[in-house]
Image 1 (cartoon, one colour):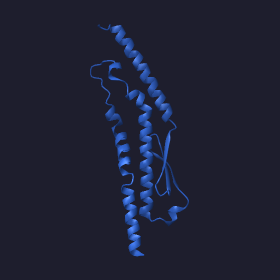
Image 2: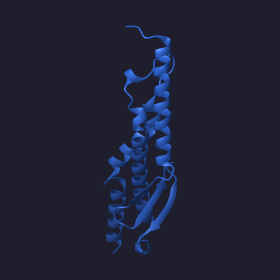
Image 3: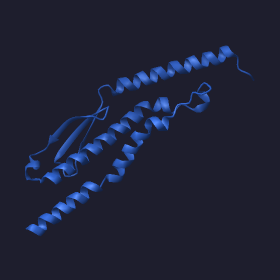
Length: 153
């Protein structure tokens, strides 16, 4: 059965309206979104906004006073990476209604193809990197710091 041009236009218009609403909902959801994470040693808490910018760094319970510079830096980086990964997941979830539209519901347009992997690729990399680093680089750095302190003491 062949679809008339008017039917195709109506279907494309309806899909465009759904997409615009989904994008507006996602933007509204993310307008005040933030993600907060703490380092494993619970000495640092970092908050990032929906654009991934650091909006707050807290040094908790005065623990930073007894930490070396490298150890403190490792804690800040660890908390920052975790907060970025949380925010990346939040952004991807907010845009999921747009990105998960089945291909057969999309209007067929020559030369128009949305590359969602290209759009969300950097966010996926952030999430994967954070998952791989849990118990990774910052723990290794802390181990080296502890070993150095033991050698000196």
